[in-house]
Length: 324
Image (cartoon, rainbow, N blue to C red; front, side):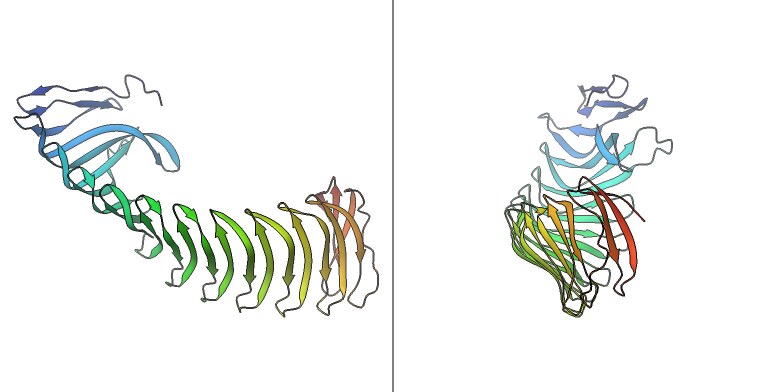
């Protein structure tokens, strides 16, 4: 990012052991406050200023930072606090960004980071790397989610929580990538969906459930893309539909079924596009108007579970363009 001369100007001089560094920001000069020892090393309490870009109010913008803490022989030591202030902030209010513990210039301990909505998160560090838990809290101090780091990389389970404290999501990580069984839950604690990931991509069988534990949908993934045969089920456990994916796209005949097991409709898909309506039947097996869809263009009739015509879709080039 290019900055104008009026946006930032830093000059460093050393006189009588005191810092003379100033930063010009938003037409105001900010002077570092600190002391150099006889060896020229920063020592004791310091307040330092610098400018950089930061995401503020959902917009990346230039801000000035104020960092305050202690130096020992030119190395940060103890807890440092970092504040920031956006440009054109007429209130001149410093906003607390984080509190960071240092040992010999390396982050070591629990860092706390603050957001404008009063939510915050903590991160455990050792030897300058993320090591240990990262925990995110809502503004009412309720734990939102937590994950573990090892040598700066996500490792172990990312666990997200509902406000009542029940687990919402569990995602296992290895070396910064999703690896293992991902599980998502309803607020009542019932499993909502579950499937395997490898190297950050879904692979193998994946299952979805209703909130009473009944299987809702079953399918498979290959290298992160939907593949093979998929099936959905009614809450009463009867088969609702069956269809197939090829390289992430619906391909072949999508069949819908009535709860009594009789075929409801058949629609041919081609590379993810609705291509032809083949048949439509009521629950007793009697044929009914299906629509005119052929070669990706025409109409497709939809019926309620009680047999009434509810919608007619207009399809062009395999894509729905209107309904009535």
